[in-house]
Image (tube, rainbow, N blue to C red; front, side):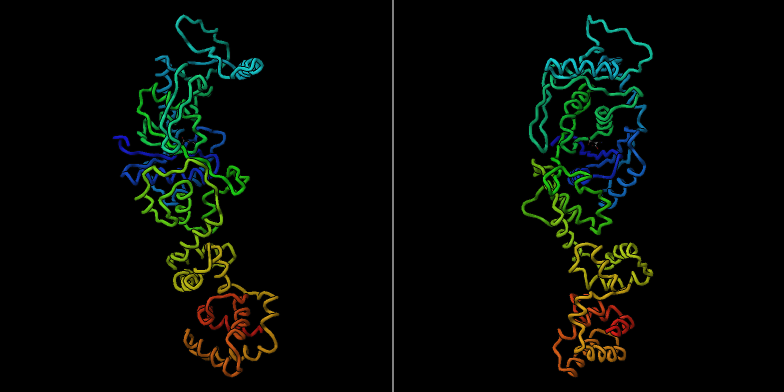
Length: 468
Ligand code: GLU
């Protein structure tokens, strides 16, 4: 652990939704900062102007809000810092640490092709790199230069990765990186260093697709005389087919899980556990995560996305969730099913429905499907209707309808009415309960019948039984 103030960041590019992998590194960065009483920064890396969109920014901010990943600074937009990058680049050029390169893409490709033909590495040939006693080519007319970083020609870059352990890459493997494009906009590997320096980032957690960028970044930090952060590269997340989780392979945005009826604390729990462990703990709160997460026990090998486990985790949180809170979430899901409830119903009645059903639902979408039976129309399942609503039981159902029309509307009185009908027709509970369930809820599998009837309400129950 360094003596620097702990400052972490997440730096998503707004070229699409917040990926699950980025959400996970955001979570680790956040938990690490919170654990050590440090600070967490949100930076939007929007220098890929052609692909960055406001819509992506909005989705990223919404995902962070939903997951409860509060940041102490930001969002900071790279495109608002262009002057700063330019100043650093000018300084580097003045100090001989960077240089203009006028090679055209066609020239570069021709050089690469020639090297390929000779079986050599296709690194940049250093044509425009200044050196003592070297005469540079004449500057061609009408060519806008890029700026390249003078990467050290020899030696190794080594760092002790917080996740992967010591990593060494030879400078001979890497070339003079372009740090500003012809339009003057800096490239990722340069802007990220200036930002991590200016924002005094002490620890960088990110996906391991960036391991190959890290040597360049370390060399640029060193060239700038900036203190190095510690790096931790988390392995990718694999889909259930063992391939990298990608848009095509079922990877969806964090917001899609919100819409899909997951609770943020379940998502946070699942994401944290995917790639990190604290003993055998499977279910933990964000407070526990913060208490435990010190950057150790991060897995070196890729984690596999497991939708079944995520559902299980979500179900555990739904069971424990406050029913009024669930009601508000379920009300939003009901709107998608075409059912819009009054605020009064959401505040007083829907929580009763949620309390009754939350044990058997793994998402708020599933809860809404159930809740819809209490507010919308119910079409009994045809097979179950044929099986349970028979001529033999119809008279008992009719009698129950009559008794329920007259009795006080509470669970005990409803239970008493059911008992009276059972006695009058010499029937056993299931013989009556099954058809009543099918008629009232559309299915024979429901929670306790008297509770279902009480919450469904007299008017609806009588009308649905009348269809026997
Ligand atoms: N914008 C980069 C990305 O989204 C950030 C990588 C980093 O954290 O340095 O992958």
